[in-house]
Length: 362
Image (cartoon, rainbow, N blue to C red; front, side, top):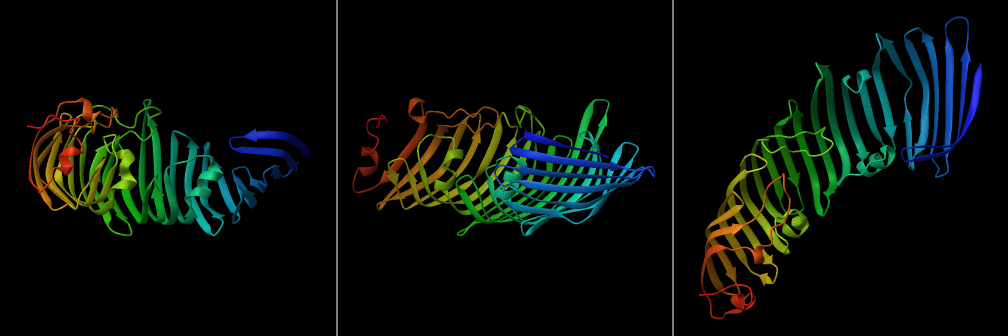
Protein backbone atom coordinates (compact mmCIF):
# COMPACT_ATOMS: atom_id res chain seq x y z
CA UNK A 1 0.00 0.00 0.00
CA UNK A 2 1.32 3.41 -0.94
CA UNK A 3 -0.17 6.88 -1.24
CA UNK A 4 1.00 10.45 -1.51
CA UNK A 5 0.18 14.05 -2.37
CA UNK A 6 1.82 16.30 -4.98
CA UNK A 7 1.20 20.03 -4.69
CA UNK A 8 1.45 22.83 -7.27
CA UNK A 9 2.39 20.78 -10.30
CA UNK A 10 2.36 22.30 -13.80
CA UNK A 11 1.92 20.15 -16.89
CA UNK A 12 1.65 21.87 -20.28
CA UNK A 13 -1.37 24.19 -19.99
CA UNK A 14 -2.58 22.77 -16.64
CA UNK A 15 -1.74 24.17 -13.19
CA UNK A 16 -2.72 21.53 -10.64
CA UNK A 17 -3.00 22.51 -6.99
CA UNK A 18 -2.83 18.96 -5.68
CA UNK A 19 -2.65 15.40 -6.96
CA UNK A 20 -3.56 12.51 -4.66
CA UNK A 21 -2.29 9.11 -5.74
CA UNK A 22 -2.77 5.69 -4.18
CA UNK A 23 -1.56 2.17 -5.00
CA UNK A 24 -2.64 -1.10 -3.39
CA UNK A 25 -0.71 -4.33 -3.94
CA UNK A 26 -1.59 -7.97 -3.15
CA UNK A 27 0.16 -11.34 -3.20
CA UNK A 28 -2.01 -12.48 -6.09
CA UNK A 29 -0.10 -10.26 -8.53
CA UNK A 30 -3.05 -7.89 -8.69
CA UNK A 31 -2.91 -4.22 -7.84
CA UNK A 32 -5.16 -1.14 -7.78
CA UNK A 33 -4.27 2.44 -8.61
CA UNK A 34 -6.11 5.73 -8.31
CA UNK A 35 -5.27 9.34 -9.12
CA UNK A 36 -7.29 12.44 -8.24
CA UNK A 37 -6.09 15.79 -9.55
CA UNK A 38 -7.51 19.29 -9.01
CA UNK A 39 -6.48 22.59 -10.61
CA UNK A 40 -6.98 26.21 -9.62
CA UNK A 41 -8.99 26.94 -12.82
CA UNK A 42 -11.64 24.30 -12.15
CA UNK A 43 -9.80 21.45 -13.87
CA UNK A 44 -10.18 18.01 -12.30
CA UNK A 45 -9.51 14.41 -13.25
CA UNK A 46 -10.07 11.09 -11.50
CA UNK A 47 -8.66 7.79 -12.76
CA UNK A 48 -9.18 4.37 -11.16
CA UNK A 49 -7.39 1.37 -12.66
CA UNK A 50 -6.68 -2.23 -11.70
CA UNK A 51 -4.00 -4.59 -12.90
CA UNK A 52 -5.86 -7.88 -13.17
CA UNK A 53 -3.06 -9.96 -14.70
CA UNK A 54 0.54 -9.62 -15.79
CA UNK A 55 -0.44 -8.07 -19.11
CA UNK A 56 -3.92 -6.61 -18.64
CA UNK A 57 -5.09 -3.36 -17.01
CA UNK A 58 -8.74 -2.51 -16.45
CA UNK A 59 -9.62 1.21 -16.16
CA UNK A 60 -12.96 1.46 -14.37
CA UNK A 61 -13.12 5.24 -14.10
CA UNK A 62 -11.80 8.10 -16.20
CA UNK A 63 -13.74 11.29 -15.51
CA UNK A 64 -13.11 14.97 -15.02
CA UNK A 65 -13.53 18.54 -16.15
CA UNK A 66 -10.78 19.81 -18.46
CA UNK A 67 -10.84 23.43 -19.59
CA UNK A 68 -14.58 23.68 -18.76
CA UNK A 69 -15.46 20.56 -20.77
CA UNK A 70 -16.83 17.43 -19.10
CA UNK A 71 -14.60 14.51 -20.09
CA UNK A 72 -15.33 10.87 -19.30
CA UNK A 73 -14.91 7.43 -20.79
CA UNK A 74 -16.61 4.08 -20.52
CA UNK A 75 -14.57 1.42 -18.66
CA UNK A 76 -11.89 -0.05 -20.93
CA UNK A 77 -9.05 -2.57 -21.02
CA UNK A 78 -5.43 -2.12 -21.97
CA UNK A 79 -3.23 -5.09 -22.84
CA UNK A 80 0.55 -4.96 -22.52
CA UNK A 81 2.28 -7.51 -24.71
CA UNK A 82 5.90 -7.48 -25.88
CA UNK A 83 6.29 -3.84 -24.80
CA UNK A 84 3.24 -2.94 -26.91
CA UNK A 85 0.18 -1.21 -25.41
CA UNK A 86 -3.03 -2.51 -27.00
CA UNK A 87 -6.41 -0.72 -26.76
CA UNK A 88 -9.34 -2.97 -27.72
CA UNK A 89 -11.53 0.16 -27.51
CA UNK A 90 -11.12 3.52 -25.80
CA UNK A 91 -14.32 5.58 -25.93
CA UNK A 92 -14.02 9.18 -24.64
CA UNK A 93 -16.87 11.66 -24.36
CA UNK A 94 -16.07 15.39 -24.47
CA UNK A 95 -19.16 17.43 -23.71
CA UNK A 96 -21.80 16.07 -26.06
CA UNK A 97 -19.20 14.73 -28.49
CA UNK A 98 -17.30 11.49 -28.76
CA UNK A 99 -13.83 10.21 -29.69
CA UNK A 100 -12.99 6.52 -29.96
CA UNK A 101 -9.59 4.90 -30.47
CA UNK A 102 -8.46 1.31 -30.90
CA UNK A 103 -5.08 -0.09 -31.80
CA UNK A 104 -1.49 -0.50 -30.60
CA UNK A 105 1.22 1.85 -29.33
CA UNK A 106 4.84 1.07 -28.53
CA UNK A 107 6.32 4.59 -28.76
CA UNK A 108 6.21 7.58 -31.09
CA UNK A 109 7.93 5.56 -33.84
CA UNK A 110 5.75 2.44 -33.57
CA UNK A 111 1.95 2.70 -33.55
CA UNK A 112 -1.11 1.43 -35.40
CA UNK A 113 -4.30 3.26 -34.48
CA UNK A 114 -7.85 3.61 -35.81
CA UNK A 115 -10.29 6.16 -34.51
CA UNK A 116 -13.39 8.20 -35.04
CA UNK A 117 -14.74 11.54 -33.86
CA UNK A 118 -18.18 13.14 -33.82
CA UNK A 119 -19.84 16.33 -32.54
CA UNK A 120 -16.62 17.81 -31.16
CA UNK A 121 -16.04 21.57 -31.06
CA UNK A 122 -12.48 22.25 -32.22
CA UNK A 123 -11.99 25.17 -29.81
CA UNK A 124 -12.81 22.88 -26.87
CA UNK A 125 -10.45 20.20 -28.20
CA UNK A 126 -7.63 22.73 -28.75
CA UNK A 127 -8.10 24.07 -25.22
CA UNK A 128 -7.91 20.59 -23.65
CA UNK A 129 -4.71 19.55 -25.44
CA UNK A 130 -3.09 22.99 -25.23
CA UNK A 131 -2.71 23.96 -28.89
CA UNK A 132 -4.20 26.56 -31.21
CA UNK A 133 -4.84 26.35 -34.96
CA UNK A 134 -6.65 28.69 -37.38
CA UNK A 135 -9.21 26.01 -38.30
CA UNK A 136 -12.37 26.42 -36.18
CA UNK A 137 -15.78 24.78 -36.19
CA UNK A 138 -17.61 21.68 -35.04
CA UNK A 139 -16.54 18.27 -36.29
CA UNK A 140 -19.76 16.53 -37.31
CA UNK A 141 -17.99 13.29 -38.03
CA UNK A 142 -14.55 12.01 -38.88
CA UNK A 143 -12.32 8.98 -39.07
CA UNK A 144 -8.58 8.62 -38.70
CA UNK A 145 -6.07 5.85 -39.28
CA UNK A 146 -2.45 6.23 -38.15
CA UNK A 147 0.34 3.81 -38.77
CA UNK A 148 4.05 4.30 -38.22
CA UNK A 149 7.03 1.97 -38.30
CA UNK A 150 10.74 2.74 -38.08
CA UNK A 151 13.06 1.12 -40.59
CA UNK A 152 16.80 1.85 -40.59
CA UNK A 153 16.36 5.31 -39.03
CA UNK A 154 13.67 6.25 -41.59
CA UNK A 155 10.27 6.96 -40.11
CA UNK A 156 7.46 6.33 -42.59
CA UNK A 157 4.11 7.42 -41.14
CA UNK A 158 0.82 6.67 -42.87
CA UNK A 159 -2.29 8.80 -42.27
CA UNK A 160 -5.76 8.22 -43.67
CA UNK A 161 -8.20 10.94 -42.65
CA UNK A 162 -11.75 12.03 -43.40
CA UNK A 163 -13.43 15.02 -41.72
CA UNK A 164 -16.74 16.88 -41.98
CA UNK A 165 -16.72 20.26 -40.18
CA UNK A 166 -19.76 22.53 -39.88
CA UNK A 167 -20.12 26.27 -39.17
CA UNK A 168 -16.40 26.92 -39.12
CA UNK A 169 -13.67 29.28 -40.23
CA UNK A 170 -10.03 29.48 -41.24
CA UNK A 171 -8.75 32.83 -40.02
CA UNK A 172 -11.14 35.36 -41.67
CA UNK A 173 -12.65 32.87 -44.13
CA UNK A 174 -16.03 31.60 -42.88
CA UNK A 175 -17.70 28.45 -44.19
CA UNK A 176 -20.90 26.50 -43.61
CA UNK A 177 -19.40 23.07 -44.29
CA UNK A 178 -15.96 21.65 -44.98
CA UNK A 179 -15.33 18.07 -46.06
CA UNK A 180 -11.87 16.62 -46.67
CA UNK A 181 -10.52 13.15 -47.35
CA UNK A 182 -6.84 12.50 -47.91
CA UNK A 183 -4.00 10.07 -47.31
CA UNK A 184 -0.45 10.92 -46.30
CA UNK A 185 2.50 8.65 -47.01
CA UNK A 186 6.02 8.99 -48.39
CA UNK A 187 6.09 12.76 -47.97
CA UNK A 188 2.88 13.30 -49.99
CA UNK A 189 -0.84 13.98 -49.62
CA UNK A 190 -2.42 11.76 -52.27
CA UNK A 191 -5.23 12.00 -53.10
CA UNK A 192 -6.64 15.31 -51.84
CA UNK A 193 -10.40 15.78 -52.03
CA UNK A 194 -11.65 19.03 -50.49
CA UNK A 195 -15.15 20.51 -50.63
CA UNK A 196 -16.04 23.77 -48.91
CA UNK A 197 -19.50 25.33 -48.89
CA UNK A 198 -20.07 28.98 -47.94
CA UNK A 199 -23.27 30.99 -47.63
CA UNK A 200 -22.83 32.14 -51.26
CA UNK A 201 -20.62 29.65 -53.06
CA UNK A 202 -18.07 26.85 -52.84
CA UNK A 203 -14.46 25.70 -53.20
CA UNK A 204 -13.55 22.29 -54.62
CA UNK A 205 -9.98 20.98 -54.78
CA UNK A 206 -8.64 17.67 -56.05
CA UNK A 207 -5.15 16.34 -56.72
CA UNK A 208 -1.97 15.67 -54.76
CA UNK A 209 1.14 17.42 -53.46
CA UNK A 210 4.39 16.74 -51.64
CA UNK A 211 4.50 18.05 -48.08
CA UNK A 212 6.30 17.22 -44.83
CA UNK A 213 3.66 17.20 -42.12
CA UNK A 214 6.21 16.25 -39.46
CA UNK A 215 8.83 18.88 -40.20
CA UNK A 216 9.81 21.14 -37.31
CA UNK A 217 10.72 23.94 -39.73
CA UNK A 218 9.27 23.98 -43.27
CA UNK A 219 6.25 22.07 -44.56
CA UNK A 220 7.52 22.39 -48.12
CA UNK A 221 10.91 21.81 -49.67
CA UNK A 222 12.16 23.45 -52.85
CA UNK A 223 11.63 20.43 -55.13
CA UNK A 224 8.26 19.32 -53.77
CA UNK A 225 5.72 18.70 -56.53
CA UNK A 226 2.22 20.12 -56.95
CA UNK A 227 -0.70 18.78 -58.99
CA UNK A 228 -3.97 20.35 -57.81
CA UNK A 229 -7.16 21.48 -59.56
CA UNK A 230 -9.25 24.10 -57.75
CA UNK A 231 -12.75 25.29 -58.67
CA UNK A 232 -14.43 28.13 -56.78
CA UNK A 233 -17.62 30.16 -56.96
CA UNK A 234 -18.61 33.43 -55.24
CA UNK A 235 -15.73 33.52 -52.75
CA UNK A 236 -15.48 36.76 -50.77
CA UNK A 237 -12.02 38.19 -51.47
CA UNK A 238 -12.11 40.29 -48.29
CA UNK A 239 -11.98 37.07 -46.27
CA UNK A 240 -8.76 35.85 -47.95
CA UNK A 241 -6.84 39.13 -48.27
CA UNK A 242 -4.02 37.95 -46.01
CA UNK A 243 -3.20 35.11 -48.45
CA UNK A 244 -3.02 37.23 -51.60
CA UNK A 245 0.51 37.99 -52.89
CA UNK A 246 0.17 41.78 -52.84
CA UNK A 247 -0.11 44.40 -50.14
CA UNK A 248 -3.22 46.32 -51.27
CA UNK A 249 -6.78 45.43 -50.26
CA UNK A 250 -8.89 43.30 -52.60
CA UNK A 251 -12.68 43.05 -52.61
CA UNK A 252 -15.44 41.32 -54.55
CA UNK A 253 -16.78 37.81 -55.13
CA UNK A 254 -14.52 35.54 -57.14
CA UNK A 255 -15.43 32.56 -59.34
CA UNK A 256 -13.19 30.53 -61.58
CA UNK A 257 -10.78 27.68 -62.11
CA UNK A 258 -7.15 27.17 -61.12
CA UNK A 259 -4.73 24.41 -62.17
CA UNK A 260 -1.52 24.24 -60.10
CA UNK A 261 1.53 22.29 -61.32
CA UNK A 262 5.27 22.54 -60.98
CA UNK A 263 7.16 22.68 -57.69
CA UNK A 264 6.66 24.63 -54.48
CA UNK A 265 9.69 26.77 -55.34
CA UNK A 266 8.56 27.38 -58.92
CA UNK A 267 4.82 26.74 -59.27
CA UNK A 268 3.02 26.99 -62.59
CA UNK A 269 -0.60 28.13 -62.43
CA UNK A 270 -3.24 28.36 -65.17
CA UNK A 271 -6.88 29.31 -65.03
CA UNK A 272 -9.63 31.86 -65.41
CA UNK A 273 -11.08 34.31 -62.94
CA UNK A 274 -14.29 36.31 -62.77
CA UNK A 275 -15.04 38.83 -60.01
CA UNK A 276 -18.36 40.54 -59.39
CA UNK A 277 -18.20 43.98 -57.71
CA UNK A 278 -14.38 43.90 -57.81
CA UNK A 279 -12.31 46.30 -55.73
CA UNK A 280 -8.55 46.81 -55.63
CA UNK A 281 -7.08 49.51 -53.43
CA UNK A 282 -8.83 52.70 -54.64
CA UNK A 283 -10.59 51.06 -57.60
CA UNK A 284 -14.18 49.82 -57.40
CA UNK A 285 -15.77 48.21 -60.44
CA UNK A 286 -18.76 46.25 -61.65
CA UNK A 287 -17.22 43.19 -63.35
CA UNK A 288 -13.78 41.73 -63.97
CA UNK A 289 -12.84 38.71 -66.06
CA UNK A 290 -9.55 37.32 -67.33
CA UNK A 291 -7.60 34.25 -68.27
CA UNK A 292 -4.26 34.00 -66.54
CA UNK A 293 -1.08 31.99 -66.16
CA UNK A 294 1.78 32.23 -63.70
CA UNK A 295 5.42 31.12 -63.77
CA UNK A 296 8.81 32.56 -62.79
CA UNK A 297 7.27 35.28 -60.58
CA UNK A 298 5.26 36.67 -63.48
CA UNK A 299 1.47 36.74 -63.65
CA UNK A 300 0.36 36.86 -67.27
CA UNK A 301 -3.08 38.36 -67.90
CA UNK A 302 -4.75 37.38 -71.17
CA UNK A 303 -8.03 38.87 -72.39
CA UNK A 304 -8.54 40.88 -69.23
CA UNK A 305 -11.86 42.72 -69.10
CA UNK A 306 -12.91 45.30 -66.50
CA UNK A 307 -16.24 47.15 -66.38
CA UNK A 308 -16.16 50.35 -64.28
CA UNK A 309 -18.79 53.07 -64.06
CA UNK A 310 -19.98 52.42 -67.60
CA UNK A 311 -16.44 52.33 -68.99
CA UNK A 312 -14.99 49.19 -70.55
CA UNK A 313 -11.28 48.42 -70.10
CA UNK A 314 -9.10 45.67 -71.54
CA UNK A 315 -5.70 44.47 -70.43
CA UNK A 316 -2.93 42.10 -71.48
CA UNK A 317 0.56 41.67 -70.12
CA UNK A 318 2.74 40.65 -67.17
CA UNK A 319 2.68 41.68 -63.52
CA UNK A 320 5.35 40.63 -60.97
CA UNK A 321 3.90 38.61 -58.08
CA UNK A 322 5.16 35.86 -55.78
CA UNK A 323 3.16 32.65 -55.37
CA UNK A 324 6.13 30.63 -54.07
CA UNK A 325 5.45 28.40 -51.07
CA UNK A 326 9.11 28.54 -50.02
CA UNK A 327 9.63 32.31 -49.97
CA UNK A 328 6.61 34.34 -48.90
CA UNK A 329 7.98 37.87 -49.18
CA UNK A 330 5.34 40.18 -50.62
CA UNK A 331 6.46 41.99 -53.76
CA UNK A 332 5.88 45.73 -53.79
CA UNK A 333 4.02 46.15 -57.05
CA UNK A 334 4.44 49.94 -57.13
CA UNK A 335 8.24 49.58 -56.94
CA UNK A 336 8.71 47.00 -59.72
CA UNK A 337 8.35 47.33 -63.52
CA UNK A 338 5.12 46.14 -65.10
CA UNK A 339 4.77 45.18 -68.77
CA UNK A 340 1.05 45.63 -69.29
CA UNK A 341 -1.03 47.05 -72.15
CA UNK A 342 -4.18 48.73 -70.87
CA UNK A 343 -6.88 50.11 -73.20
CA UNK A 344 -10.42 51.22 -72.68
CA UNK A 345 -13.44 53.18 -73.70
CA UNK A 346 -14.97 55.58 -71.19
CA UNK A 347 -16.48 59.05 -70.97
CA UNK A 348 -14.07 60.14 -68.19
CA UNK A 349 -10.55 59.57 -66.79
CA UNK A 350 -11.62 58.58 -63.28
CA UNK A 351 -9.70 55.29 -63.34
CA UNK A 352 -6.41 56.78 -64.58
CA UNK A 353 -6.64 59.78 -62.26
CA UNK A 354 -6.53 57.46 -59.26
CA UNK A 355 -2.99 56.36 -60.17
CA UNK A 356 -1.59 59.21 -62.28
CA UNK A 357 1.21 59.77 -59.75
CA UNK A 358 2.36 56.11 -59.91
CA UNK A 359 2.30 55.17 -63.60
CA UNK A 360 3.67 56.68 -66.80
CA UNK A 361 0.65 56.88 -69.06
CA UNK A 362 1.16 57.17 -72.85
